[in-house]
Image 1 (cartoon, rainbow, N blue to C red):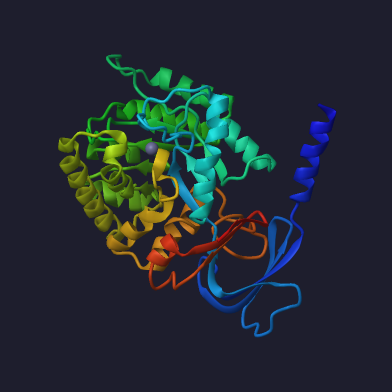
Image 2 (image 1 turned 30 degrees about the vertical axis):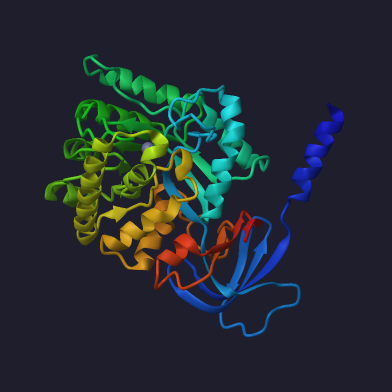
Length: 400
Ligand SMILES: [Zn+2]
């Protein structure tokens, strides 16, 4: 026991980052492009960023063939949804103890880091497995993206009458248990179901948002359909997840309030591609395709109206490793690559109340840096396929 704890302490100690100097050919700092850039990292923070440096300092890590971008933020994951791919099994339906899930889900965490995502907001887990993963990653005991987590999402009990007081109590219980965020299932819809039926009333949403805000926590409300999105926005949700057929009034209200919309367009593309793994029926596919088209159309209108958009993959099971494919949809919705990157950097960091720590490569910010092969500001696909090296908190976590 004593020997083990000494070994563990030594591993953590040796992982303590020191002063590192990095050189990039180009660097997008979250606001602008710089050329010939030397970045100095002190411990887990960025100390300096200097452009126009033609000489490579002695001892520097030479990454001049790459373009650096800030570590990316995925605003919607379910990282504890793990599938071991055992023949004859499906992703849904495997049951195991939470501690076993935490151990196995390291694989999802590793795949996520490999996409350049160094921070996630995890919106729904059972058995408090997400709390454990968050804490292990923060301790440096488990490699993975830093995590902001919600615990078990709040949903309405089938057949029960609306009960705002019970919702308020649920919020207080989640926060006491250790949730950073409150996740609400405001409608049906998930996996092969695109059922848009609202399940939580406006009054309940309002009770949830007020209770969370009173305790200094934020709220993300899931809604597949327009009425749930409308009520979530009016109730003061900090972010709204999914959604189609948004009316102009709701879009204008999101823009006015600064509500972040996380459309998660790509997750239904994933369900279509992974239909055989899940065993979805052929008749489930056209409604998924139809949802994607409507989801994209509403995103296009929201982009035009100046709504803050966030990148969320809604990754589950075998979707980890595809976390950033949502960026391509952002460009299809009318954004420039820089605007698409903002959905996973500055806008996401602001939503997480981390705008002075995450989402930029600048002095004082966390040393989360991704080296991309290609031209990320010209071709967003280079971000999706061109990640070659990732630093998180001053430590190199991916090297390809
Ligand atoms: Zn989700």
